Every structure is written in structure tokens, then in C-alpha cells.
Length: 513
Picture 1 (cartoon, rainbow, N blue to C red):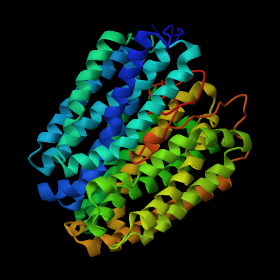
Picture 2 (cartoon, rainbow, N blue to C red):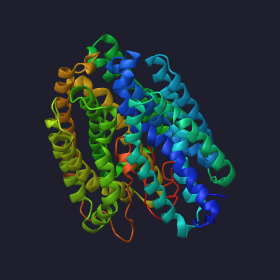
Picture 3 (cartoon, helix red, strand yellow):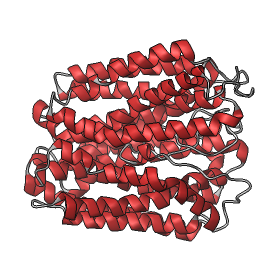
Picture 4 (cartoon, helix red, strand yellow):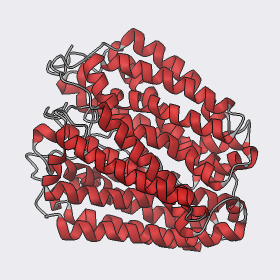
């Protein structure tokens, strides 16, 4: 079966249900890992004697390899078979998860997380790409909807499960949980998921571009993380190296025949603007999700379980209202939602300034995350649809992949930079007074980023961008907006190659974190 051929599998058949199960469980591995690690960070730091910079790398090592290689992973699936690359990614992810669980030191844990990100880059594009490739066109939207809904349930229980594991058997079990899931996914996918590939996929992979992008992000991330302890010569060297590597990446992308990042996309003023909005809002989201659980545990004295549950209202709101918000954006245009959404989110973040040593979940935490969740509901669906509307239809796949990578890079840099900007470093994350002071500064910065995103949208996005007949409503998935640093995008498009059309008839649906 090729992507150019219509899928024939029907959702109501036994095999259709098995395919759906395999893709849901596969994506849930990456999703659960993203939602539970944040909750466990304070306990990991205590058990392994890790400074704040090491905890930042526990998140960023994974995001770095994932962001740098996810487009390459999608292209590998197109060329060599989506099921094959998906299964390799699942096995790789599980093995790295086991290494994370067994890590005796924080250095080993960080290295294992980087390896885990490679597995995520291989399995992530394949989940939805397999759905769109094997299902009959009449059943694709329903399959994506079920994938999104079932995954949303996983997202809702993820923080609860993570908190329970950290409070109970220990933080290592948040990684061990991936092993039995992987065994089940491999068994189901090997037996029931048909292989699919794009027989027309030709040309060379942009391996040099992927390597330069990862090295540039890594160098800048290291510089920002190390800056928390002072502007030493190595900070300046790493920062300069990151900028030079970034410049080399741009040169390579201009000259290579099939670039990982086609720079011509940015000739669209709208595409550039929407990605700037993405950088602003997802940097803010990542900063909030990273520091809020630390504030709740270290300053407010909440257990890991309660801290994990703090973000559940956002998940519930996204599940309940995202489809309606998508239809609203289609009806009135994206300019108002993309402006108002970030401003409402900023209001919720400012309400988090009330969270302190004597914070109450019901009067301090819940109102803040509820307001932020309402803003995210307004924002996410129009952002997804506007990314697709900003380019020609034949470039929709790579456009969504670029936007996905932009969100991950924003989260990566935010987690690296915010603690330094807020004055938090070393062992200070275990001192309540230091954490409380830094949290307030960081929330002001995040609110400013969200406001900047709203202003950018207001000044650059036209109200009539989304033509109803040309751009179907995107149905966002709260799993990847809630703490996993990635925007929900259209199915199958993360792995689409430059110059090809979108893999489905609809722009509906998300991609994974």
C-alpha cells in the first residue's frame, strides 16, 4: 500500500480496531512520558542529588533529539515503511525508558533521555501516518477522532498516574511503565497493521541539516542553562557556537536539493507570523508547566499526586470545548481567537502569582489553570488551521512539521532560559523562598510572552484567512498542548515530504508530542 493509494481498511472491522489500538498505545507511550516526567522532577533531584541545571537537561535532552530528528523520522517512514520505522521507534523508546529507570546517576539519566528522544522521533510521525494510510477515506476522520479522544483520556490520567507512581513505588516506575506498553504495541502492530510507504519518495535525506539543527539547538540550550551559574567563558563559547551552527544550517538549507526546512515557506508573511506566535505561546506554556509543579511541591507543600492533578482542568477543557472553538475560528476567522486566546492565557498565568506557601488548590490553583485552559481552547484550533492556510496545499505537510518543530524548540529554549532569567540555579530549587521568588519572576515573563503572541497575531493575521470551503476545521488534541511542548497538528503531516500534498483530505487532527 502506498500513500498515493486510497486506504481500504474499515474502522468497524476487527483489524480496524486493532490498528486503532496500536496507534493509540504507541502515541500514549510518548504522551505519558511527557506528562509524568515534570511531576517527578523534584523527587528525581532529591534522590540523585541533582542541581537544577541537570533537571533542566532531564527534560531538554529528550526534547533536543526529538525536535532535531522528528522530520527525518517521518521521511524514513515514508521511504522504508511506516510500520517498520514505527516499530523500531517503539522498541528504541522502550529500551531507552528501561535505561532511564535504571539510571544510577543524573548524568546517565540525561544521556538515556537523549536516546529516548531518538526513539520518539521515529515512532511519533508513524502513529497518525499509519491511520491515514490504511483506513478508507470515509473512515479516516472517525479514526482520527477516536485516536484523539482515547488519547485525551490517557492525557487526563497521566498526571494522576505519574503523581501516584512518584508517591508510591517511586519515580523510576514512570519510565518502566513504557516497557509493557511497548511489548503490547509491538505485538499488535506486527500482527494487525499493514505496511505502507510512499513509493514515490526519492532523493537524499537531509542528514546534515538535521545534525546542524540539533547541534545548534544543543549549543544554545547549553549556554542558556549554564548561564544560570554565571556568564563564564564556556557560556559565551557555547552561545557563539550555537549561532554559527544555526547560520550554517540556514546556508545548507538554501543549497540542499531536498531541505529538511524549506526556507521558501517563510516568504509567506502569514506563515512567518503564525510561527512567531507559536514560538511565543509555546515557550510560555513550557515555562509554566515546568515551574508550576516545582512551585506546588517545594513552596506550597503539595504532594506529587496533587501537583500532577493541578493541570487536569486544562485537559478537561480542551477535550470538552476544542471542537467548538475550532468551528468558531472557522466562522469568525483566526485573528480574534489568536489575539484573545493568548491574552486570556496570560491572565491565567498572572493569577498564578497568588500561588505561594499557603496556597489552596481550590481558591488559588484551580482558578488560574481554568482561566489558562480557556485561553488555550480559544488559541490552539485556529493556530493549527492558520498554519495550513498560510501555504499552498501541496506544502501543508512540511508546513505543519515546521510548526511542530518550532513549538518543540520554543519549549526547549524556555526550559533552559527561564530559571536563569528568574535567578534560580544550583540547589536553590530545593529552597522554598528561592523557588517562590523565581516563580513569580518567571510567571511575569511567561505572561509577557503570551501577550506578545497575542499582539503579533492581532497585527499580522487577517480575519478572512480561513476560507470555509478550502480549510476544514482542525480538531486539536489537548494531549500535546498540555505540558508536552508541542502543538496539535494535522494527521500524517509531520512525516510528509517537501513538495507533496497533505496525506489526508482534512486538516483535522493533531500530531504527537
